[in-house]
Length: 231
Image 1 (cartoon, rainbow, N blue to C red):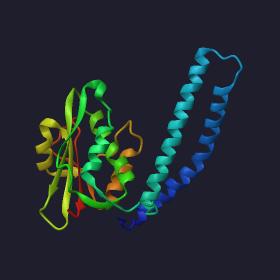
Image 2: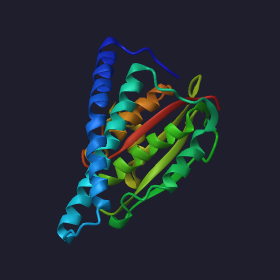
Image 3: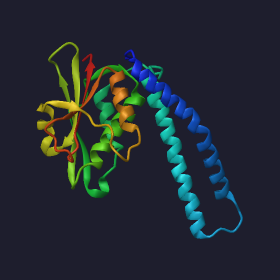
Image 4: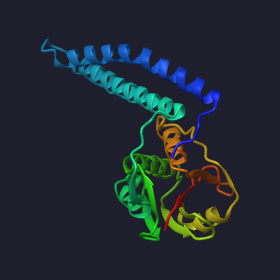
């Protein structure tokens, strides 16, 4: 499930690792002092309390971003450990989708269709769950109006090995997304931290690919994931 890292990736991974090392200590110190202020019994105005609470939330987010930077650096350096277990990708995808409620307040729903099982592979189930969770949330966030986003699961038996295809697109464009020429997926989307760059790397470490259909409207949001499977 691993591929050799090229020299430029190794250089970037070392720089990221150094940045993570340098950022962790000050972030930890700031977070510690903010938590001390939250526990302080001295009188404090509601405005001051709110400012400290918001600062602490932002610090928690910074710590999470540092952890994501560490994950990217490990994946790029080829030192991230992936567990190896037999799994069926299609039930895993459904289970992840059922826990994603990113845009329900805007009446954007996520619906799973297609093959219910039959995509057997060896992989790290926990990391794959995280990758699909990030992709689903990204596509849901980009829908401009109320709609149903479909997670369509297909098993392609055109070669050896077979391929498990997962298309994530608005209901009306699922088939066109599947049939369109494929472009690199834009992982530099705001609001999700480094979840998408990590998702792409996890998918590729499993021998898969993450694409975007060329025909998709820029603001419509769509993704295609493909994995080699044994079934």
